[in-house]
Image (cartoon, rainbow, N blue to C red; front, side, top):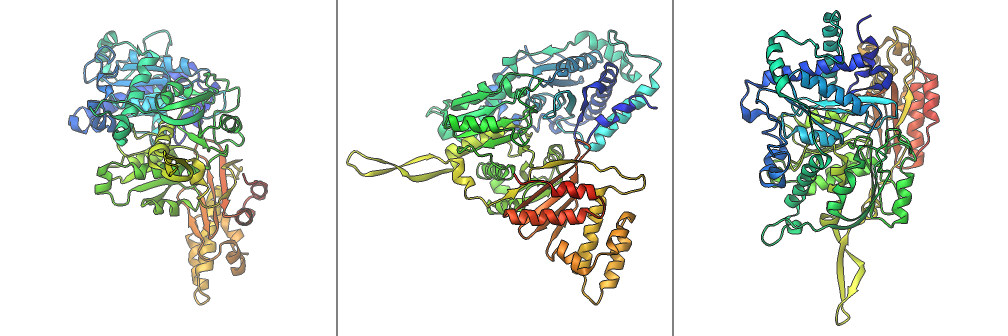
Length: 634
């Protein structure tokens, strides 16, 4: 058996994540060595490129804000904080979340990287977006020890290479490099208390010299947080100069006249949320803001059913304007409106897309007539229409925030904003780091509500000196917007166990996709060419498991299951869009599960779509069909 074969399951589509028992000292040592090779190889490839093409030069923060912002004089730019090292050496930013074991793993990785000649800056307990922000100030390399919103007892890592998130292929290549190198070096067992880690010989002499010059730099909490807060402040100076600049162009922040409640879920935002939001809002109420890796109130996942009950109650009791909830590492956002109702993620995506469209810089308005807005395959059937009404071009995407970030970073990208049902939202307008930052997204929404989404409320008219009515402007309430959005009845994004299958049997998602393709051919074919169309569809099928199911399907049954006009999308699982709703079934990229969601314009529509999926799945897996039938609407 190959070395670390049991750890292979940790290497997933977006990150490394799994049960803490698999993160053994030997595995962490080998993983650290793999990261050293990864960053040094990348750095070697970049040395020959012009400086103008480096990630930091093209960073939105660098271009738009640093030169004329407090960051220019902040600890980031201060020579006493920036590491003293030669340009050829690579700087890696490291941070960790609140989980038990995350801090020790981060310290181990930092030590391994430093011993092999890499400059390491340990930011301590931070959010994943803060790690991404800091990497942009250096070479774009960063490691965040986090398992995000997963339950306690789960550990994990996310990382950036040159400001770019790894693809699923990159993650598997890291694993292959890890096991291949470790197999070759197994006779030199790594002593965690020594400096005997072996790396390619070409760099050994330079590494030993660099090691004696470098040390892991640990920064105080204020030093880490202040530049991040200042950079966000500069965003709102740029967007709303009339609100935040005096007549002499000095920054004079006008705090938003809002009452907000924030649920940190005992996660990584616990230490930063209060100083950040009190900078911009007059009244901030924080709950569950003690960092605690045991997560006493439940998993740090704001999308879980009933997980926001405490936040809802606090919004109502405090007559707050909005409630914000952040997940374990601060990259996912859910909100509660002023009535205490949870805003559906589809609607939140629309709200934030409205923010991006209305506040986009002049360069976007000049060069891109209809900016693209990316949304994932689990979002509702209403969203494309709503986004088109904003003047955006809606683009359906696979699920996965890291996949979305990769699309944003394409040279010809016209994507202004991206979001997904799980609460990841990314502004790509150049004001700030193009990363899914829940706190930043929340602040963008708050400022938009206060300054852009204004309306005249006649019910709040005041009386002037002579008794004449005076209309007063007020920040629009969330309910003023959400009540106007289309009715949507939906199930949650449910996770169902991935069905087991025989060795030669196709995955159930593939079976469903090919069955739906066959049914569509059956429905679309005319009576004259029915036989030839069915033969062609049958021959093109790559799944022999479908044959026994389709040969007994009549045309009437096909039309009942997939009426004419039904849209089938198979870019990520199986999605079916009907006239009054949609359904999606796909395999999760982060766990051994299927994810399913159904939505309709009414409860009747939802049940009808759900019943169709039950009928479609029954030929392949009766137990799965029963599980789907038992799902309830939210």
